[in-house]
Length: 433
Image (cartoon, rainbow, N blue to C red; front, top):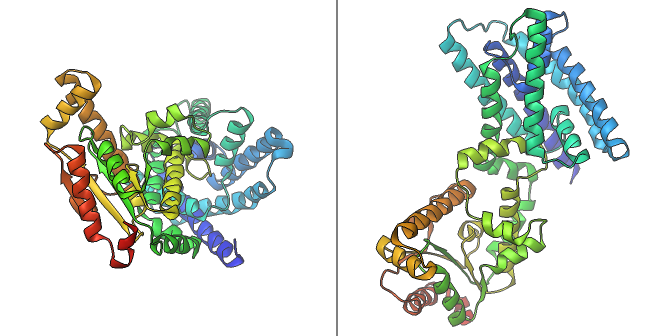
């Protein structure tokens, strides 16, 4: 990493830290509770002289000390940066609390609107820190230290940590004020919304990360773009026979064929077993619930297993495309290879009755079961594709060719696709087909 890039990252991080503190203060000023990590400092600041920022600093130092005790010699040297960051963050909180001193919403509606606005601001701050990717705040570093020391899942540990500090803040409030002073519905709402907002922005604003990273991504994209290999991606509705069509197409063209072998390759390049990969890939049930769970991995280099799975498969697909002519089935390959000149994306679909009949014959199930199975799998593919690409699965403008194979056998369908590929491929590459 160059010094210029590192400087960029730290500048972005400081900006994110300020936005983060502004979001915390905004949520606090809404008077419906504050974020879980700030709940203990906020409750204490209501009963004692030190400010919210100062109590935040005290808590940060305690969390850093516990990290050192847990990790000992494994405590990374760069984690020491948490100390100056904690001082800056605490000062930012007191500064933004002062800037928002005029803010005192009276009606519940205005308090709720202020809370949501604060969650959005805090989500932007968290996202900005994710983009910078230089330092973790003590809260996230503490959770990571606990998960590493006790071999626990990071996401579940984060949920336990947030729940614990919220409960402790509630107990402190009951002792000092005989009521829940610093913990209210806003604490729960911010816990649910902030990470989701940050992950949403991370998916939608990838160009910001490209700016931070510099030329690395551009060079990677250029390699794909200048690759003269010919790649055919096959996306298909479940029950349309797309897999068999793709396999016959690869044989006729003399291309390498990538489908289930990607599962084996993914297992070899990750710590995920093949049966898990086969069960989980392209089968996201609900993107909202997934975001709700995966938000707890924000601000760390940790990834959810589904994100890791997508990333590993994406790298395998890029590598396959760089090696030679090939046919790739599913797995968002059309989107992953969007910068490649000689990539032809095909979507195979069919009428419902035809698909149901094919499923019944292949899987030996009745019509009702086949219909449910077909709709369930196609829905999961739709959600998975939308989540990772931001595009609509099966939407014709996303493909070079959409083919209705109702009534066609796999041989005829593959012949039609091959004719299209030969017609469409650039003249200088025609000898490769």
